[in-house]
Image (cartoon, rainbow, N blue to C red; front, side, top):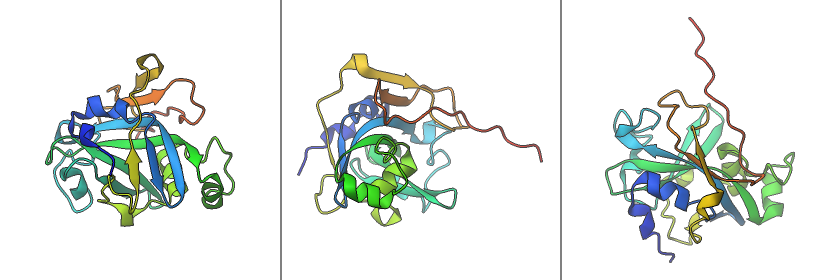
Length: 196
Protein backbone atom coordinates (compact mmCIF):
# COMPACT_ATOMS: atom_id res chain seq x y z
CA UNK A 1 0.00 0.00 0.00
CA UNK A 2 1.26 3.51 -0.78
CA UNK A 3 2.52 5.71 2.05
CA UNK A 4 0.09 8.62 2.37
CA UNK A 5 1.33 9.89 5.75
CA UNK A 6 2.05 13.31 4.21
CA UNK A 7 -1.74 13.81 4.11
CA UNK A 8 -1.70 14.23 7.92
CA UNK A 9 -0.26 17.74 7.51
CA UNK A 10 -1.97 21.15 7.39
CA UNK A 11 -4.29 21.54 4.41
CA UNK A 12 -2.45 24.50 2.86
CA UNK A 13 0.80 22.53 2.91
CA UNK A 14 -0.71 19.29 1.65
CA UNK A 15 -2.84 20.72 -1.17
CA UNK A 16 0.02 21.70 -3.53
CA UNK A 17 1.72 18.35 -2.84
CA UNK A 18 -1.24 16.64 -4.52
CA UNK A 19 -0.38 18.27 -7.84
CA UNK A 20 1.03 15.54 -10.06
CA UNK A 21 -0.44 12.76 -7.88
CA UNK A 22 -2.37 10.00 -9.64
CA UNK A 23 -5.90 9.10 -8.68
CA UNK A 24 -7.08 5.76 -10.06
CA UNK A 25 -10.45 4.07 -10.15
CA UNK A 26 -12.48 1.82 -12.45
CA UNK A 27 -9.73 1.43 -15.03
CA UNK A 28 -8.87 5.14 -15.35
CA UNK A 29 -5.95 7.11 -13.89
CA UNK A 30 -5.96 10.91 -13.67
CA UNK A 31 -2.80 12.95 -12.98
CA UNK A 32 -3.98 15.86 -10.83
CA UNK A 33 -3.25 19.33 -12.20
CA UNK A 34 -5.57 21.50 -10.08
CA UNK A 35 -6.83 21.32 -6.48
CA UNK A 36 -8.52 23.54 -3.88
CA UNK A 37 -7.97 23.58 -0.11
CA UNK A 38 -10.81 23.70 2.43
CA UNK A 39 -10.01 24.28 6.11
CA UNK A 40 -13.07 22.97 7.96
CA UNK A 41 -14.53 25.10 10.76
CA UNK A 42 -12.07 27.94 10.06
CA UNK A 43 -13.24 28.30 6.47
CA UNK A 44 -16.64 29.75 5.43
CA UNK A 45 -16.20 28.03 2.06
CA UNK A 46 -15.97 24.56 3.62
CA UNK A 47 -18.84 22.09 3.98
CA UNK A 48 -17.67 21.62 7.58
CA UNK A 49 -17.85 25.32 8.52
CA UNK A 50 -21.03 24.86 10.55
CA UNK A 51 -20.07 21.49 12.03
CA UNK A 52 -20.59 17.82 11.40
CA UNK A 53 -23.55 16.55 9.38
CA UNK A 54 -24.46 13.25 7.75
CA UNK A 55 -23.27 14.66 4.42
CA UNK A 56 -19.81 15.84 5.56
CA UNK A 57 -19.03 13.22 8.25
CA UNK A 58 -16.17 11.72 6.24
CA UNK A 59 -14.29 15.04 6.45
CA UNK A 60 -13.97 14.58 10.22
CA UNK A 61 -12.34 11.17 9.89
CA UNK A 62 -8.70 10.30 9.36
CA UNK A 63 -6.58 11.67 6.53
CA UNK A 64 -6.37 9.61 3.38
CA UNK A 65 -10.09 9.04 2.91
CA UNK A 66 -12.13 10.16 -0.07
CA UNK A 67 -14.99 12.59 0.65
CA UNK A 68 -17.51 12.50 -2.21
CA UNK A 69 -20.57 14.73 -2.30
CA UNK A 70 -23.47 15.33 -4.68
CA UNK A 71 -24.16 18.90 -5.77
CA UNK A 72 -26.64 20.87 -7.87
CA UNK A 73 -28.79 17.74 -8.13
CA UNK A 74 -26.58 16.31 -10.87
CA UNK A 75 -22.82 16.26 -10.15
CA UNK A 76 -20.43 14.43 -7.85
CA UNK A 77 -17.22 16.03 -6.57
CA UNK A 78 -14.35 14.31 -4.73
CA UNK A 79 -11.99 15.52 -2.02
CA UNK A 80 -8.96 14.03 -0.30
CA UNK A 81 -9.32 14.33 3.49
CA UNK A 82 -6.17 15.70 5.14
CA UNK A 83 -4.87 16.78 8.54
CA UNK A 84 -5.37 15.24 11.98
CA UNK A 85 -8.59 13.34 12.63
CA UNK A 86 -11.37 15.73 13.65
CA UNK A 87 -10.06 18.78 11.76
CA UNK A 88 -12.42 18.30 8.78
CA UNK A 89 -9.90 19.64 6.27
CA UNK A 90 -10.06 18.43 2.69
CA UNK A 91 -8.63 19.09 -0.77
CA UNK A 92 -11.04 19.19 -3.69
CA UNK A 93 -9.59 17.45 -6.76
CA UNK A 94 -10.60 20.00 -9.37
CA UNK A 95 -8.97 18.80 -12.58
CA UNK A 96 -6.44 16.52 -14.15
CA UNK A 97 -5.13 14.76 -17.23
CA UNK A 98 -6.27 11.22 -18.01
CA UNK A 99 -3.00 9.26 -18.29
CA UNK A 100 -4.38 5.70 -18.38
CA UNK A 101 -7.73 4.26 -19.36
CA UNK A 102 -8.54 6.96 -21.90
CA UNK A 103 -11.00 4.71 -23.75
CA UNK A 104 -12.98 4.05 -20.57
CA UNK A 105 -13.00 7.78 -19.72
CA UNK A 106 -14.25 8.56 -23.24
CA UNK A 107 -17.04 6.00 -22.82
CA UNK A 108 -18.17 7.85 -19.68
CA UNK A 109 -17.78 11.29 -21.30
CA UNK A 110 -18.44 10.58 -25.01
CA UNK A 111 -18.83 14.18 -26.18
CA UNK A 112 -15.65 15.42 -24.49
CA UNK A 113 -12.28 16.26 -25.98
CA UNK A 114 -9.28 14.53 -24.41
CA UNK A 115 -8.30 17.83 -22.73
CA UNK A 116 -11.74 18.08 -21.11
CA UNK A 117 -12.15 14.47 -19.96
CA UNK A 118 -11.28 15.41 -16.35
CA UNK A 119 -11.20 19.23 -16.59
CA UNK A 120 -13.38 20.29 -13.66
CA UNK A 121 -14.41 18.39 -10.52
CA UNK A 122 -17.65 16.89 -11.87
CA UNK A 123 -15.98 15.76 -15.11
CA UNK A 124 -13.12 14.24 -13.14
CA UNK A 125 -15.57 12.21 -11.04
CA UNK A 126 -17.44 11.07 -14.14
CA UNK A 127 -14.21 10.00 -15.87
CA UNK A 128 -13.21 7.99 -12.77
CA UNK A 129 -16.76 6.70 -12.16
CA UNK A 130 -16.77 8.13 -8.61
CA UNK A 131 -20.00 8.82 -6.73
CA UNK A 132 -21.43 8.72 -3.21
CA UNK A 133 -20.78 4.96 -3.03
CA UNK A 134 -17.09 5.86 -2.72
CA UNK A 135 -17.48 8.37 0.12
CA UNK A 136 -15.13 7.27 2.90
CA UNK A 137 -12.96 5.04 0.68
CA UNK A 138 -9.42 4.58 1.97
CA UNK A 139 -7.11 5.93 -0.72
CA UNK A 140 -4.17 3.78 0.41
CA UNK A 141 -6.09 0.64 -0.57
CA UNK A 142 -5.90 -0.67 -4.12
CA UNK A 143 -9.33 -2.34 -3.80
CA UNK A 144 -11.18 0.86 -4.78
CA UNK A 145 -10.20 4.44 -5.59
CA UNK A 146 -6.53 4.89 -4.75
CA UNK A 147 -3.99 7.69 -4.72
CA UNK A 148 -0.31 7.58 -5.60
CA UNK A 149 1.69 10.63 -4.65
CA UNK A 150 4.35 11.98 -6.99
CA UNK A 151 7.53 13.90 -6.26
CA UNK A 152 6.64 17.42 -5.06
CA UNK A 153 6.05 19.68 -8.05
CA UNK A 154 8.63 22.24 -9.13
CA UNK A 155 7.63 25.37 -7.13
CA UNK A 156 8.14 27.51 -10.24
CA UNK A 157 5.24 25.67 -11.89
CA UNK A 158 2.75 26.00 -9.02
CA UNK A 159 0.27 28.85 -9.21
CA UNK A 160 -2.28 29.96 -6.60
CA UNK A 161 -5.45 32.00 -6.78
CA UNK A 162 -9.02 32.25 -5.49
CA UNK A 163 -11.23 29.20 -5.38
CA UNK A 164 -13.74 28.77 -8.19
CA UNK A 165 -17.39 29.78 -7.81
CA UNK A 166 -17.17 30.31 -4.06
CA UNK A 167 -19.18 32.81 -1.99
CA UNK A 168 -17.66 31.93 1.41
CA UNK A 169 -14.16 33.46 1.72
CA UNK A 170 -13.75 33.88 -2.06
CA UNK A 171 -10.63 36.02 -1.67
CA UNK A 172 -8.47 33.27 -0.16
CA UNK A 173 -5.85 32.08 -2.69
CA UNK A 174 -6.41 28.42 -1.83
CA UNK A 175 -6.68 27.08 -5.37
CA UNK A 176 -3.43 25.50 -6.62
CA UNK A 177 -2.62 24.46 -10.18
CA UNK A 178 0.26 23.55 -12.45
CA UNK A 179 1.16 26.31 -14.88
CA UNK A 180 0.70 25.62 -18.60
CA UNK A 181 -1.40 22.47 -18.10
CA UNK A 182 -4.27 22.39 -20.63
CA UNK A 183 -6.48 20.37 -18.27
CA UNK A 184 -6.66 23.16 -15.64
CA UNK A 185 -10.19 24.55 -15.45
CA UNK A 186 -11.09 28.14 -16.18
CA UNK A 187 -11.52 30.43 -13.16
CA UNK A 188 -15.04 31.70 -12.57
CA UNK A 189 -16.10 33.77 -9.54
CA UNK A 190 -19.37 32.96 -7.80
CA UNK A 191 -22.45 34.27 -9.56
CA UNK A 192 -24.00 37.18 -7.67
CA UNK A 193 -27.07 36.32 -5.62
CA UNK A 194 -30.34 37.41 -7.18
CA UNK A 195 -32.50 39.82 -5.23
CA UNK A 196 -35.70 38.18 -4.01
